[in-house]
Amino acid sequence: MRFFYFNGAMIRLRVNGEAVESGAASVQGLLAELGIESGRVAVEVNMEIVKKKDYAGFLLKEGDVVEIVNFVGGG
Image (cartoon, rainbow, N blue to C red; front, top):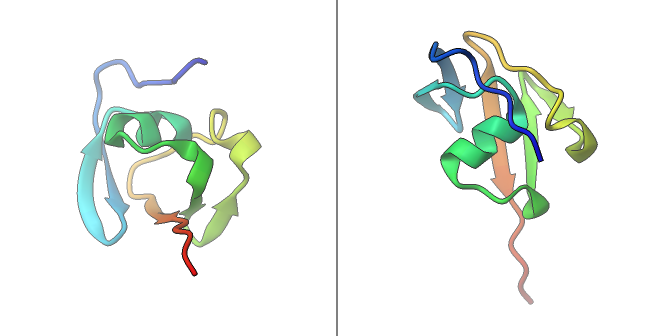
């Protein structure tokens, strides 16, 4: 598994409503940086759902708004 990171440069994102600085270049890299397993989450960037198969190749840019939703089972 390969993660993409900018060359030490940080970008500013809004993640679940909070301002975050990140060195991750992709959704997959951001999830890894945040310590979030990709298996049970859904990710939206700028109001567009990102498919799990695209996490590694979906590149983030300055000012992106990211929503990460965790699926919780129950009954």
